[in-house]
Amino acid sequence: MKNIVVLVSGGGTNLQALIDAVERGEIKNGRISCVISSREGAFALERAAMHGIKGIVLPRRSFPDSESYSEAMLEVLKSEKADVIVYAGFMTILSKCVCDAFPYKMVNVHPALIPSFCGKGYYGLRVHEEALARGVKVTGATVHFVTDVCDGGPIILQKAVNVEKDDTPETLQRRVMEQAEWKILPEAVSLLCDDRIEIKDGRAYVI
Image (cartoon, rainbow, N blue to C red):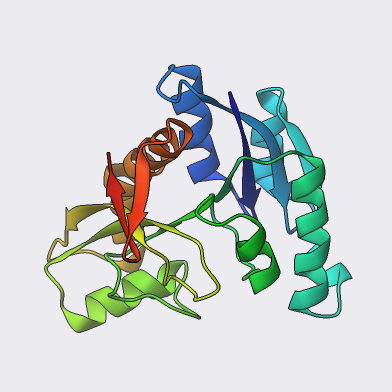
């Protein structure tokens, strides 16, 4: 049984999707052992508490730079014996030291079809604003491995979502979450816990 540690910064809707999947028995070889928040008072911590999951606050603002924060995060992840690490609305980019310590064990869900609308600064509503501004007809979500390149790790799963003509960034964000993010994130975590993802030539394949 693998220890899944979920990193959060806000409301925790993707965390909830993971919790629900575990409780439905869809993630058979993993359990959410800990939730770590970069912000005090994040509602995601309340979600964790309601399901008896340990919560830890490691405030980003308490550290002078990304490197020192990453080093502190690395120590917490090691102490929690993390096997799988999930970015679920986690708004801090961790440095190479963390990625190197957990190669192909860290995953992130991004609210677009990478390589579109991704990279530094592309998060939250901005992703959907840019998609609508470009007039794309299809968007979606991507689950990928976390590396030291922002949104640049091997892609595990993607799911497309149609853009409607009357969409606002808010309605599109909600549809992408409901139809894509909340489905493929638990699926990818389950695959990782089952050791069913392999890397060949920098690409991820489900086996």
